[in-house]
Length: 234
Image 1: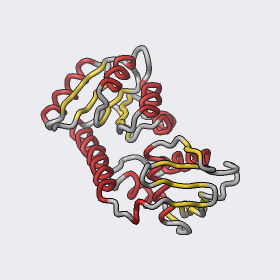
Image 2: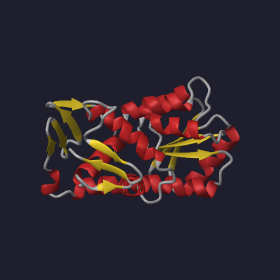
Image 3: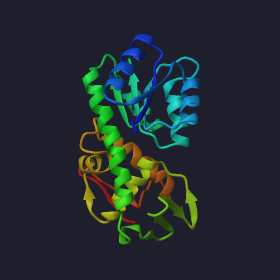
């Protein structure tokens, strides 16, 4: 079955161009021209990937991204006409997986779409291939990572955690005591072909700390090693 992509774009010419090129690559494409219709389409039939414009009528892309990320783990490729690092970081904080600035190469967009979808397939196949040993829970004091349910618990209570935060936490926990560079973390958690910068790691580490650290301002579980990266202490 063809993978389904939801394209959210209010520029009709660009929307038609994206639809044409993605369809030619064998994807099934659904479209929406504003944020409200995007949410309606995603909820009706969760797609395999969303290409989401930042500037949209009725509800902007940031808000759409935030809501979708709360409800599902579909990868999001955000498009914007502004080349501003602040916008990029805010987009990533809202839950976008990748970011492209207009005007962009259609060939590059297709490569990034393919990379994001490949990452999803690899994640799914890793879950299927997990051995009984890898399914064991990991416990660190009052914190438990349930590898079967893909859950984080503190004092026995489930803590809401986004898919990428969970993957980052598991990667850090499996390398407890080791100093891991941002570049290595990006490669192993996001994939070698992820086009975002190392600040992406910092943003997600901050999110994790807000969930698992007794004191976010003095982290003891995920420690920053100046000039080197991060070390998980448990």
